[in-house]
Length: 75
Image (cartoon, rainbow, N blue to C red; front, side):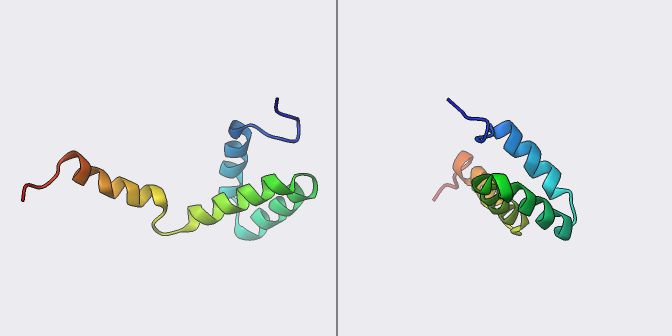
């Protein structure tokens, strides 16, 4: 069973979306506020935000592989 301190993924994604829209300084303030009561949640959100800032994240690279998997070239 999930405790009130364990947000579900809908809540995590909602928080991520809200934080991603903020300027960096405000984002850091909000993460610090979340970390006061929920340090694990703040760490997860920080990791998600960091991954979101990568120029080519895992989802981007994975999508580039799909055409080759679906339509392999003949030797």
